[in-house]
Image (cartoon, rainbow, N blue to C red; front, top):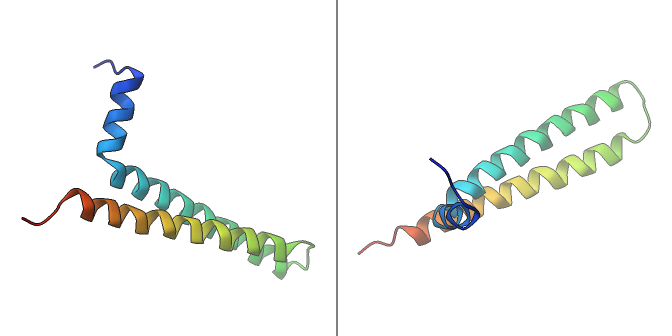
Length: 81
């Protein structure tokens, strides 16, 4: 099956909840990995562990926002009649 760009964009827009949920889960997982790195850096008394922890916090919060938006898009896409 061959998709052109317009078909792919239309498919994504019709399934925005799926796009946001996958993106959110990727961000949450990456943020938790960064948090682990920050913990390791603090345990080994290395520099910049606070920076790593702050970046991890931002990435996890971004992922949670995407998951929340996915829930909103899913509810908007399936109205109760």
